[in-house]
Length: 328
Ligand code: NAD
Ligand code: MG
Image (cartoon, rainbow, N blue to C red; front, side, top):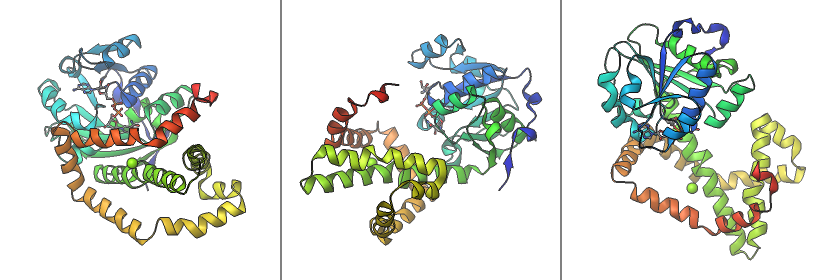
């Protein structure tokens, strides 16, 4: 593993350079504000009709329409939703300077060839391993969220140097920047969110809730056991891995974990994980998601509504209304 730290970074290559951040959502806002605080010249590119425009203005940033924003930029960062990047690139490419660097926070658009950049441009990835809110908060505290770095196209010979300087600008180099490839970042990121973090975990929570409620237990008690308490466990795992979790849970819980866990995640579940990974690797997942997006996301909206209409959501909202600490 190759890891870069602040000592490996020379931000001088970005002195007097304009950095244009396209998009002002979770990542865009954090990157733009951190870069300004690091002393860089930042322009935010947004549609004046969009909701983020007023927000970026209110934060005191220099905001322009994407076409105007990319003019003169040494770095153009794509921080819009992945499904928008193809069209956005096509609409600004003629205004991007020769030899500029395109940066991404996730490799989807490049890896699945949604964006096929001009040969004179550098193409690199700085992917923070955390949501935008954390990227901003850690920076303000003098710390940083670890990042991944990859170079897809090195037109000028200093794409890596520029990407690392950018990582320093958003605070990531303080925590360490691990070298990867667009393929590895894209495929592992998609697999993680599908099989484990989002898809796997929520499906397990809902199945556990339904199992308890169908067996006649109170929904409120079921909610506490399978949804609410997940945070306590995730915090322990996040802070200290399996070791810390085992240190803080009871021996009874640990014994149940070790004997019952493999029954839930059994050979069938592991085979499903391998299928999910194969569909990511061979492009099937990307193809289907792009087609869904192009069709106006009918299945996406239907599945999302089904999630939101699930009884666990009603029970949860009522119980969470009594948790004063959630207001902060
Ligand atoms: P987001 O949905 O929070 O924000 C998207 C922004 O793009 C909004 O400001 C929106 O107004 C703007 N936008 C949409 N269409 C646009 C257009 N045509 N022109 C200009 N602006 C447009 O997005 P996000 O979650 O910050 O994701 C941005 C990128 O960062 C994605 O590639 C994502 O995969 C990656 N990423 C996200 C996270 C995360 O925690 N959210 C973590 C790592 C990487
Ligand atoms: Mg789900």
